[in-house]
Image 1 (cartoon, one colour):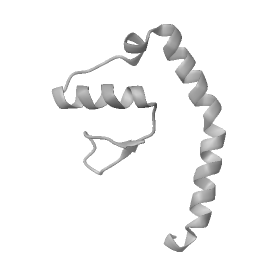
Image 2: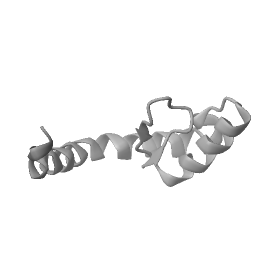
Image 3: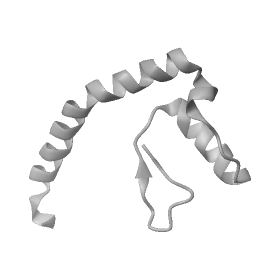
Image 4: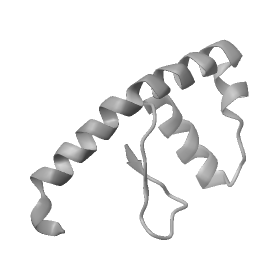
Length: 73
């Protein structure tokens, strides 16, 4: 997770560490990139499949943290 350099609102991105470096470099140079080209089609699909499998665990983690910090709501 890292702060998106292009976000005016200070948003964060949750992604793999390899993409953080690529994203920051591209933001600095305002260069567009294609993740599929960067990683290769096979590795890109693997990352996407892994991310999809992680969604339920991530949702559970976020819900637990929100419940733990309910004084903010």
